[in-house]
Amino acid sequence: MRRRRQMAQKPRFPDGPHRLAVAMQWVSVITTIGMEMALPAVVGAWLDRRWNTSPWCVAVGAAIGFAVGITHLLQVVSGQHRASPPASPRTPSSGDRARTAGDREEAALDTPDETPDGGGPP
Image (spheres, rainbow, N blue to C red):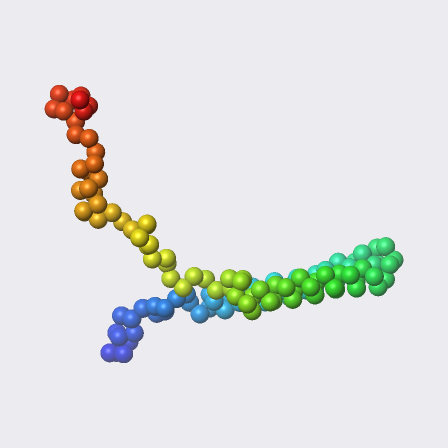
């Protein structure tokens, strides 16, 4: 019972997204690369049957599919393609930081005061 209570108190995955979500993203990337390689050859086979030009369209489709698939695969391997989600929300930079009480006081001092009669500054 004690162990169950301790596990309920700890966050399940504090360091990032759920492992299943990351796995599904990788499956998506791998499937996309496979389709990029296979579909041009399939379209080429269909065109060969339609135009009776066997094997030229299949060869051209396979070459295009291979080139596109390898290019995408190299992007994934080199890290140019985002296959995993951002690890954590972006921390605010100095330009994005919330205004502090001192900043608000400075801004209030910079604004012109109105006169008691409702008019603007003289």
